[in-house]
Image (spheres, one colour):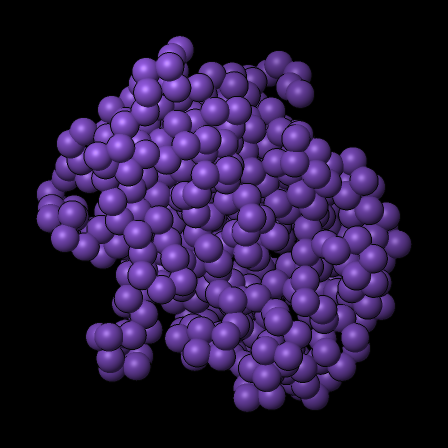
Length: 441
C-alpha cells in the first residue's frame, strides 16, 4: 500500500482537464481512494502504507501511453541517418533486424524499456521483427510493464535478408502461437497485437487472414500506412490504389485496425478511416526525420478519428522520450494551419492518455486518474526552470517545457519501475544478465 500525499494532480478529460491538489491511496495495484484538499484520510485508512510526499511541486498524471514503437530497433540508434523510408528499411533496418538473436534482442528491448520508463511511459503498442518476439514478452512479464505487441509479419519481400524471410503459413502460425501463449497473461498486463508490417511486405491473403483472426478474437491489427511519398507512389504504380484504399478493397480492415503515420491520405481514404473507426498513430519526429511530411492530425480530430502518439524506432527518431513528440505534435499543427489556437497542449496529453488507452483497448483500466483504475502513473517534479509557473497552466508546462529530467517516478499497477533515478531491481538484474555471458530467462 502506498499513500501519495499532497500532490498536484492533473486528470485528462474530453473537455476541461481537472487540476487540483490532493492525495492518492494505492492499494492492490489500483487507485483505491482519491482525497481532494482539504479532505484527509483517517489514520486507520493509511496505516502501514508507505507515505510519499508531493510537497511542494510534484505532479501526478496518468502514465504516458505510446501507441507505436519498435523496441527491437534500439541498438541501431544513430546508424541509419539521412535517407528516405524505403532505402532506410532495405539498406539499414532490415539487415539489422536480421542479425537479432535472443540475447541481442534482449539488450535492445531493455535499453529501450529503460529509456521509456525513465521518461514516464507506462504502456506501449510495440511492433517487433519477424523472429525473437517471445523474448520481448518474457522481459515485459518479468518487469511488470504494460505491453501490447506482436511479431512483424512480412511474407512478401523478395529482397529481405535471409533472417527475415517467412512464408504466409509460417507468419500466421507463429503469430497464433505467440497469441495463445501470451495474450492476457501476467495478470492481464500482456496483450497480443497482430502486426503485418506494411502493404509492400505482405501478401493480400496474409492481410485477409489477419483480419479474419482479428475478427474472431477481437485483436488489434497494427500496420504502417501512407507514410512517405515514395512508398505511396510505389504502391499506386503497382496496384493503382493508395495504401488504405487497397486494404479496404481486399477486405483487410476492421474497427480493430490501427494505422501508424497516415501522412499522405486522400479524401476517400479519410472517409474509410472514419467509416471503419480506424485509429491513427502520429509519429511526428520520425515523419520529419525521414522527410515523410506532416500528417493532417488536426483534421483527423475534427473528423472524430482517434489519434495516438508514438516515438517509433530509435533509428528514425533517435529518442524514445514522449515529451519531444508531444511538443512537436502541437507545434506542427499550429504551424501548418497558421493558427496558434489549434491543437492546445491538452490535445497532446490526450493522445498519450485517453486516446492511447482507447487504442490499446484499456480505456476502462488506464489513461485517467479515477478510483478503481489501475495505478499507472507518471510522477513529475515540476520544480525546474523549464516548468516555472506550472500551476498557472500545467498542461502547457508538461508539453512545452518538461522533459525526461522532470520525471520523478513511473508506476505500473502500483509498482514503481523507476524512482528518483533508479530502476526496479528486476529490470536492473535483467539488464546485467543480457549484457553478460550468462544464460537468461
